[in-house]
Length: 109
Length: 114
Image (cartoon, rainbow over all chains, first blue to last red; front, side):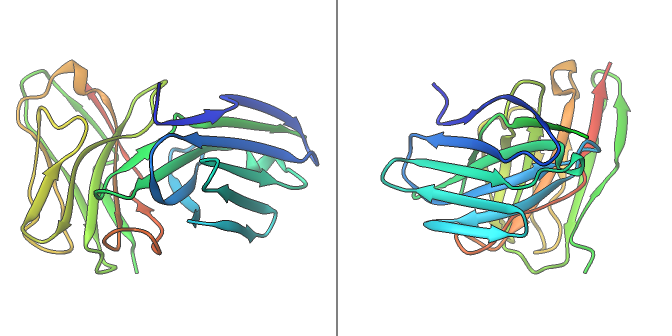
């Protein structure tokens, strides 16, 4: 079993829909990252959080440390949100990151 | 700031050839790392560094060497390329122990070994 599991693997939505991507992990962490990988391949950091909730524009990230679970929400989705969304955890021990396999999101107009 | 600059963008090698992937950052980040991304798998850590003169192995270090002579540069060397090293490679940097610091990625290098 992978230490970081994302669901779903693939997600297709219609423009305007509310989207949720989930990330569960099985190790102790000091932080969790949500990343976005564009169709062209570049990776950008969306959020880094260790507790609670963060919001940036139409994106919201939450984390529940006790349940070892995080969610990424996109409100009023748009075709430009189409990308791969990646969850990564930073362990409490060591300097390594462990990545989920990613969620491919396609938003149709 | 240029951020993380990774070169080349594309490379084709023959089996047994050597090459160096370059990575440079201008943000004074202590932590730098190399990942490979293969279809159906998450990013996997090859090597990382927590400061100049300090490097360590990640999950998949075999066939790769690194060095960190300056804070800015973290090159990845393939000494004798193999088809199994065909992949997309990413360099990333952040402040040491990223809790409190987001990751910054280079644009990736698509490597094909024939």
